[in-house]
Image 1 (cartoon, rainbow, N blue to C red):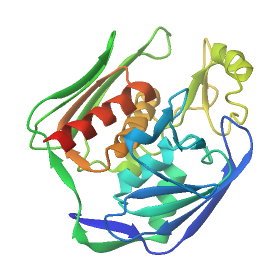
Image 2: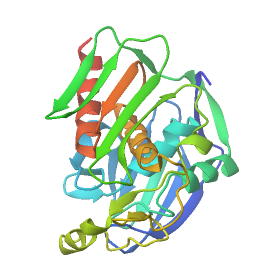
Image 3: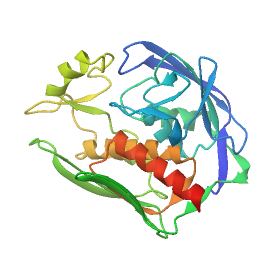
Image 4: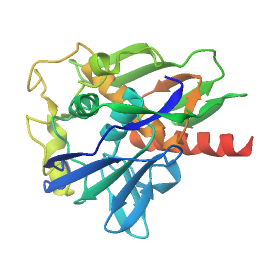
Length: 273
């Protein structure tokens, strides 16, 4: 679709925050064209834009003046994946519900409610030069290209995961089938350290894929589910650019820190041209 879209009607979703372990609820409401995605938290408006990222510690957190909302990436990924441009998100709690640990419940929710096409054209940005962010052996690059493509690779020193590589045509991908079901994951040896830092308090085998030394906690939804979840996260974090960037993207060992830094550089590049 070339035109912007919003929701046909409001919808409420409740659940548990994967990090806080507390109940949380979001109400998504239709918004006018060119509004973008805007969170409403404790009376504060927080635009879903890269300059409002305040933390990337195991999730993407947005904030303004001390007011924060955690774990926005799966919801934003689903919005970008189904083509939802404009919405208000009223958040009751500190975090977005984790649901089953993937973006599939969000995407299915949007398809059930339906999208309403608006008059304004969807904002598309065509890069005129390469843009990159690198940190050690990690990096994300975007290069001018006729199609929106993403090549991603991850590597973990674990016999069940190792190196995974795949590419996806972002304009034509069946997001609901190919990306949305991939669940958030963690390695068994990370669980106790995360809990000690006040993270993953709402995590369970119902909302995360745990990777043990010799097995997965539940059957994989894809052979490369780990990689696909990283792609899900990239799509959500790049939604913080606030526009659809037409480019070839290459992501090597992406993370929320790298993704959001790249989204910010993209925004600055676009604004400077």
